[in-house]
Length: 258
Image (tube, rainbow, N blue to C red; front, side, top):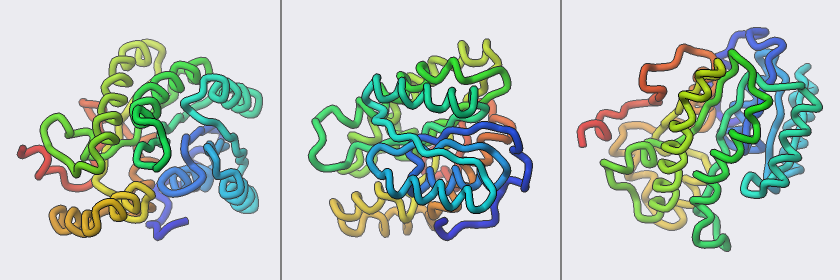
């Protein structure tokens, strides 16, 4: 696990719970799913092309006494998504927590509309596909950034703009599903954080715009690391949901003031 605080979830507090975290073979997703497993949950680790990394994490969690599986799937491919959902259904029977963590859009070699396909369309389609697994009392968590959440009012780095716009579009589309989810007893919360040190997004931004992360860190005062932010995502799955269905991580005063 990355430089992490103590697991914010009490040992055994999620015993019997079933969890799926998308994009969880590394980074925030990996630390989040580890917190859940350490708290007693049965966890599914989703990856797109990092199978070896995902299997290594599974082995680590199992060695620690957890029940874990790895399921590969391209969330932009409906057939792949259907196979993922069926695998989780067969293994767990359903889900109590679904964390929509997978995102992207800065990778090289992708089609021009890939960010929107992944960060908006795939998020909505995946949640719809997973709905049969979610029972009353379950929770959906969508992970985003302040730069995306506030993109309608606060400009972001040009290199991050396609990701920010598509993730905000995904958040808006998911929020439209809240009434239907709540009618079925399913809660929904957005977790929004600043740039996170140590993530692939931060690395790609730094590569495209040297000094960008340092500048953001100076402006924000501090940036959370992967483990710290993952702890907030894990807590968002179990703690009461704010009135606006949004859990802000860290100081957002400079975003709210604009």
